[in-house]
Amino acid sequence: MTGRVRRRGRRGWTGRLLDGLLAVALLGLLVLLAARLDRGEPQTLSGSAVVNDGDTITLGEERIRLRGIDAPEFNQVCVAGGKEYACGRRSRDALVALVGLRRVNCSGREHDKFGRLLAVCHVGDIDLNRRQVEAGWAVSYGDYHAQEDAARIAARGMWAGSFDSPREWRDMHGGMAETEHASSAVLDWLSGLVRFF
Image 1 (tube, rainbow, N blue to C red):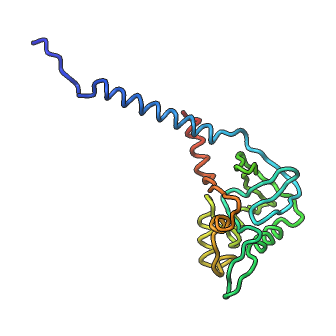
Image 2 (image 1 turned 90 degrees about the vertical axis):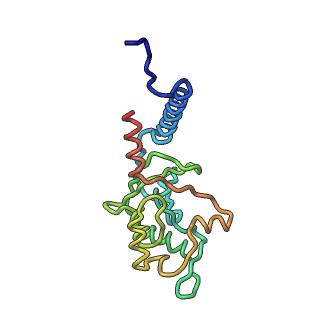
Image 3 (image 1 turned 135 degrees about the horizontal axis):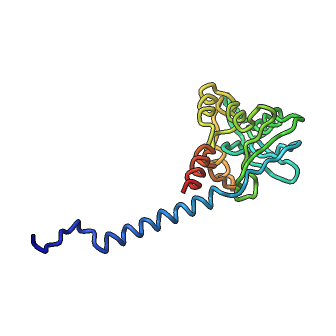
């Protein structure tokens, strides 16, 4: 036998450096993801609601944005049958009818950049977020894609005519810019993944 040393590859110090950088980048990504997802315990609120528009209510002092949906702004107009109508007011009226004088229960953990709690809200067994999309008075905004498809096919609410998406309408009218809400199922999965590591 000779004293030859067998080389296992050409990784050398550059390969180890790249492996180290990749590990640091992945660790940094996990830390950022954990900070984004783990924002404390879910907040649960209940009581009489004031309906502000088709996707925003107020419970006591807390303004709540219905998570996963986007409704037309209160002053937004849409077109149906060749005529303009106040679809933003119709969206708000639809939510008012769902809420009525009943107790609203909301649960969420994050706040948007305007300080509103992003939540799923119920009146009894009625999921208000889902129902607004099913009725065609809000579009999917991270969740409720199947309900939006069904409303569009059935020409319910805004889908009975034409409309600018609420996001486009806000952009054209200098309104608040909303950011799409990540799907609650995706957030739950990622939160579990982060806790695993």
